[in-house]
Image (cartoon, rainbow over the protein chains, first blue to last red):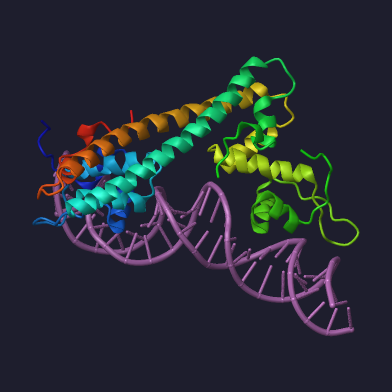
Length: 144
Length: 144
DNA sequence: GTTACTCCCGTAGTCAGCTACGGAATCAAC
DNA sequence: GTTGATTCCGTAGCTGACTACGGGAGTAAC
């Protein structure tokens, strides 16, 4: 299924994950990424699992999860009991659905404004800006 | 929609805008809100235009604009830069749509795992955990 | 006219999420 | 076996967006 587990230094891992060495070390301090045991010498080596975890963190972050929330998601991965995992999964699912609907409201609002902008291009008044000034009151898309 | 220009102290303005006094003062320091001239005594007074600008900031923030970007939008406020405003809006719209589709993918994946969990509740093995342990990359959760 | 807010203003602290610095130790190349 | 990059580790600094503090002045209520 997958490739061989490569052995990477933190620098190689960082490059593979598209982030800085210091960021990985920061995640280690936050407990999001494990520090592998030092071998004979004194330089740690990382495998593809570590890389997958960094990908996961980056993705979840881009989706709007905080590092604390990502820590919560990652405890699912660390093997608690099935019931606990399900509860956490359900909580996250609710959370994700809330984010989606919130973003969809934003999308509709922005889309409407940009469309108006397009239809009125020659005009002096910009509908996007005037709507922002009016606080989007007519759109009924504002947050709670 | 009242057009009467009220005269407000910063505290009243803050309450009307639903934010703290310190936040308004912070926006003034950032150059997002003008500091009106002090009248005879030494307390500034604000009108509905100031309130409208605070609404603008809050709404644009909700739409995902940073304060710097909002500053940019505010320079377009005279309405003659409709095209530029539209471009900024379109960029944000693209961004929002990317986030939505990514969240929808993670929603489907999480939902599937939680469902599996529910059907197998008595089991020792937790399908959600094992799926996560097998690597979330398989579930196509990563951004493009 | 005293008390209790509120305003003004500068500065400093907070929180999340990095990012940089500095001084070892270690490893890879020549 | 020396050079030069990389790692290790702790600690400090930075950015964005606030939020709080402190002390003096203005203002409102009784």
